[in-house]
Length: 372
Image (cartoon, rainbow, N blue to C red; front, side, top):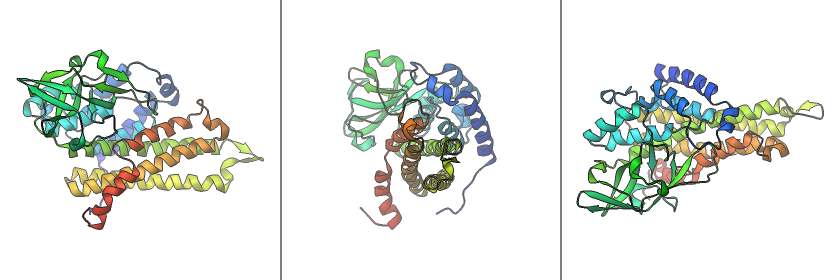
């Protein structure tokens, strides 16, 4: 295992820039104001595009910065800290998918568009909750030079605003990835979902009746690259969410008074708060270790590190969100309390690409050098 955790100058610069940007564009008042929004914040998205963040992991030959996924981490962490709702995660993951599985022609067509602000969304999860490429049920039948799609995908974030979706389908006995343009999706095939995290604009995508040219199948099907990118992004958002949770907790514990003392002076509240702080420090170590080994191309170590990060983060963020609500007393259970926004985000992140139990189950043979 790698003993070093790298934090480059580029990452430090991006963390400073992203933290300031998200603090300015996503204060809690703005987060609340956009909970019922029907569209993405186009102005903020344009600014994100102009900052070059959409090209961080896109190779330079396609107009990107070529810095790799590790430099996406500071941006995602800052977005998690300020509960920013944007199509950024989908665009980054779709870009990574195209870079690793797309043909030369597909890369040349779509990667420069992503860098310029095109929105991509991933349509992987099905109604049974499964997202694993080899276990999906959605189908694509070849009819001459066209593909007829069928099936249903859930949790397709910002699908209505996306320029394209990457959809997992079975073509015969082989699991494949297909690029579906927004204009190829009838409006009636998209249905807004009610999800626990109201900062997310999530959709169900019905594939029935959608046909696309065969050449919109991606050349490869590197699901590991998609999973690694998703786990890294989620872990970064979780780390930022832990920061936001602990700030919310500490601010209230130092403000609310009971029996002529601030409630933060009571050990029953101090100890869980310290646990959250320790969880945050552990999570940061997991996160940047995962980013380091992923950047070094050590796929086996990266898988262990990413699954450890997601397992730890899923439990830690849910605990922090729950304590934030509980520590606010009766007010914490009302919609007016901001603490519940972090709990909602934690519960959303917890089950995306597997919860703590799922990843610990997969980690067992990896860490104990066993089979099965």
